Length: 470
Image (cartoon, rainbow, N blue to C red; front, side, top):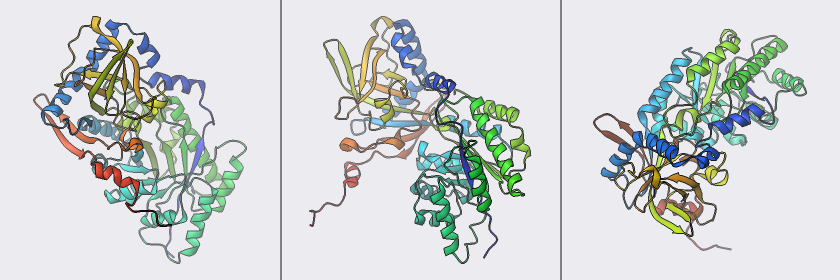
């Protein structure tokens, strides 16, 4: 048998419940701070709306003139390629050390063109399913730059991806047993399958569980990493740094316990928040995060870890994206004004079901993509309703906006992540088109990422077209 090392990442959780600080921060990051927006007067709403419209209006105008938005395709997603590239570069600059392996959360935005762009820049892919892992492999990501961390893996999936050479995050003791079974089955491991498996063990690291975790690591020397998961949206930099510090401390304790450097891979996860305010400025720059980690966890950089993995998603993808829909109808009855658009809970389920936690800023442009010229005195409270056949399909309620008319365009901001990837087939709505764009002073260029789904492609989801044979 070949000499092979099999690192594992133990998943450590700081707490089963969010701290008061985390809960407060999560509300601070969610824009448009819905309670605050509902209290805005017309002058403030007008100012904020104009600020949001300036950078996006010429992009939407170009999309209309180039027929990306038309009657056959009244809904699209637009992704700022330049902003995406700058964000990736800022992460690389913040952590220049060669041992850092920055993997992007594929679930945030699985679009092939965007992932290919990240791969070219030597970024990796964090995959939450076997399909996402195969997706990354098909796009040419190096196996050692792929982290597979589905919480539910079959023996066959583990075998296939283990032999493919990707990092694997194990979620529980059953999966550890499955990997040991695979080792026993294989008389000789494929040569390409060397030093490329990590896993996370889905138990909280507490005083009660620490001894058990230490024993598992000692009994399975191929488990050679530690992974920490703090959270996602709503985590402060200090909280993220605290998570990294706990992971380093536990890794060093493991090595002391087993008497060698068994833990050589450290996965400090992602979790850096963004801010859903419709603006271009991020909540944090990656350099701020790097500075906090260097100050609070210097041992991360001096303990000799061969690989340090980060798993950013939301803070990379969300800001560059907007979703644009034509307004198909406006209903104005008994004091309730409702604009009906071509997207709702089918692409924004969190917004529809948890609007106070996952609201988006919304702007209105006229039928040519120009900012509405209405004065602040004309602003009125309006609802934005989606196309699905259930009463709760709203993107927003009671927003103070310029009067919306049929044929106008609604722009939903900060939609580059966790929107298209959460698309639902409910009501058999077609998946919308997706374009990357680059805007200069003179023009706006578009590159198609995905065509609008055809009706036939949508309906193919619903099975074989034949009678039930029973």
